[in-house]
Length: 384
Image (cartoon, rainbow, N blue to C red; front, side):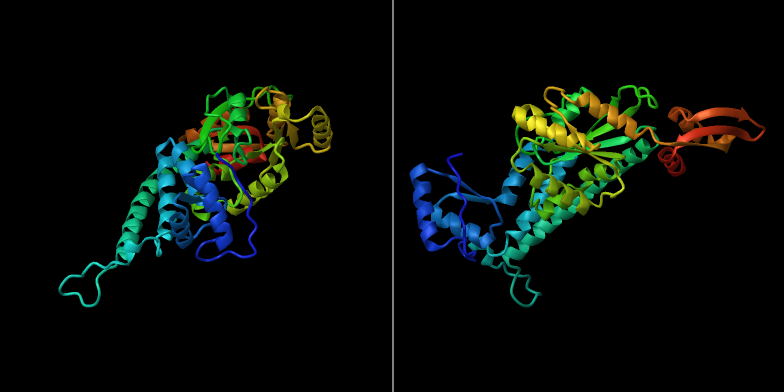
């Protein structure tokens, strides 16, 4: 990157974004530095983009276009590729309005159709709409498959723990450390676009020795996430809606960590995450803070039982976190007696897999089962 600058504008100029003086100044700087690409951290209208590119002789990308470029480079699974394509098309459709001069041309209609022919703009828009419909159909099939997987997973007696957080907060590094997986974890934006799940065996607690969970790594959030990206990746982020526990991973060494945390909370709210789902706040990257800051953070976290200072890179603090996750699922248990007929063997097997059966007696018609379980386990059984 050649450089960057914060430009304060009294008002946005509808045609050129910047005033004439600033335009000339930037043009000279771009020419001197042989700049070929300019990134604007904000929204640029199609008309502004066309005019700026013509004035400066460079390629101009706004915030949404840059995020889409990064997403396209990072997507690996079929679902991720489809979601990126859908988001890109939704964005491209908004850029058609007077974006290019050829769009004002008209093509003649059929002889029996009165009036002017279809404009190129209308044809381009219709072509994009057709592609969007095709992509949505393909995504619907993927989403249905994912829902079938979710339905199967609900019958498995393991809680789901979802890792969320701002992009580059260290979620994938923590995920790899917890699970022993090898998910791509790099110091770059949106290294993870496709959800990944792995089983984790937690440390033995008094009430939950060797408890197993399913951990899910998710796409990183970002402030002012474009609407079309939120919509396109909703299916991926729906894993968060299914979570029994959310781990909000923060880069505690980042100067804007608090603002990033607020952005994550806003996006979780917009997704419809249930306020009743417990959230652990993970203060990651302790290895990057100063010794004095580390002491201060440790003191603050000690006063908040759901905050865990860690370094996913070195493993510092991880054992305490995993122990706390296990205790989170060691809920108060109640005892009941339940009758299941012989034709309900599947739910009987589920109870035994969940290890909640205290006693069992076979009768002429089925099984009388003594059960000791948590409210969460009972809810999963009723839904099964």
